[in-house]
Image 1 (spheres, rainbow, N blue to C red):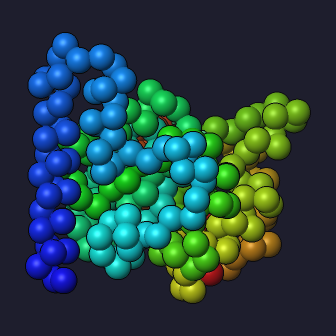
Image 2 (tube, rainbow, N blue to C red):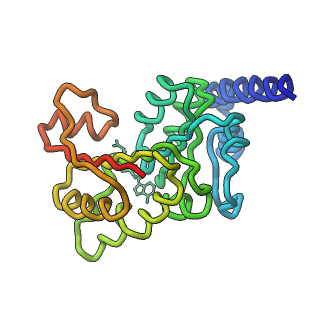
Length: 231
Ligand SMILES: C[S@@+](CC[C@H](N)C(=O)[O-])C[C@H]1O[C@@H](n2cnc3c(N)ncnc32)[C@H](O)[C@@H]1O
């Protein structure tokens, strides 16, 4: 059994490495066939599975703790986290198909075995696909602020989503929400505090930026606001 699992893991890793070379190898293939091959083992399409609940041990081939990122952009946090912490698994949920493909290709190129990416709005993914108490950390960096009053119901920090984050976080699990948008922060911080023990924090100037937006906004001299929370 152990040998079989090892063989499966090696096969998965080899498949991901091969997937990283696919854009070159498949220069003349149709977009659809390239897409299917590149998705091997890294990308998940919830539409294919009707949002069926995930078995995270099966998904990663191990029982390591799982870190969830909502709105991963180009995947800087996911890739550095997964590279530096091979003992943790990472799931990124990214709504934009373009960014999803960017992340998937970067993960494939590096042959990272501990990252999966889901291309969808995060709310139904968290609500329907993630089991209770299955996530060790939740990271949300620079979510879209939806500044107009009519649009604010789309913000990722809203009660409906926080209920689900609370459900999926394991006991002792932690979360980080970071934004440059003062009004979003002023609304989100007390909302988070209704669900979790939480603490507001301003990242120190010498702390390395975790994401591309953080790097850009820090370079521009913008204020950055952070809330850390615990279940
Ligand atoms: C402003 S960008 C920040 C990207 C990255 N976190 C960073 O800090 O560089 C927000 C990202 O969240 C994604 N996004 C927005 N709403 C989302 C949602 N409901 N579910 C998943 N991803 C979402 C966007 O497509 C975009 O890539």
